[in-house]
Image (cartoon, rainbow, N blue to C red):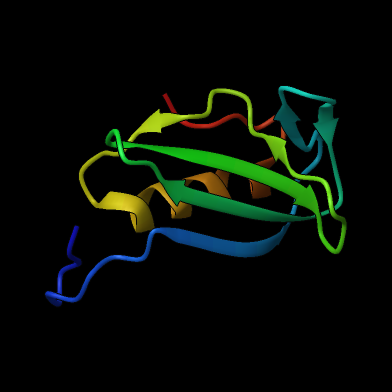
Length: 96
């Protein structure tokens, strides 16, 4: 996979974000809130996995709806969409 500048696109993107009211929904523990780290990882089957954790914690949780197909714009566009959703809160899930 290559980006717009011809360089290989990263296989994993990770950022810290403050979850909006209602937080992010996970498969394992339900809603998590507060300061979160979001990781979006390209999988070999054309999908991406999205995981979240309390920033600084060891445990990662699957964002509900993950994995999702990679769409136009690739991993970076998907990751940006996920970050936006988590910032909005409301039990954010991975885009469908």
